Image: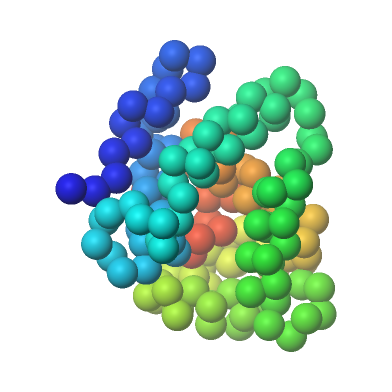
Amino acid sequence: MGQDISKIKENNAPLSEFRKNKLLYEFNTFYDLNKDGVITESDFFMVQEVKMWEQLDKTLRAGSSALPEWLTTYLWCRFNIYDRTGDGAIDVEEFAYILENFGIPERQSRQCFVMMTLNDTKPLDFAYFCELAIEYYTSDDPSALGNFITGKLNF
């Protein structure tokens, strides 16, 4: 038993294995808190989430850069979890601390932070965090910087 997203399609084409791995990693790490592999109301509304992501894909592929309200709200909440000091930017200490609480090794999350922030030359403010998140959710490119937003080095 567990989640099977192999039948989710975008324009009658299945998600790539790379994107499936990224989405499953996020779900299993951040949402399936009891680690039973079963989608329940208490874990997350995965079916609704998948539909939201499909709609986001369609919107972005149509050339729109405006994020839906649900995603802006979600990213704002997520950003503020990382930004523990409330200074409007996530630093490496905050990033590593939060991800360590989700079982991600500190060294790995620090490596991800360095890559995302281009060796700490690009501040991880909310606007950049959103750019990285959109790239994470929509990219099939294994080298895209957004892929490191969850603290995982490879999928």
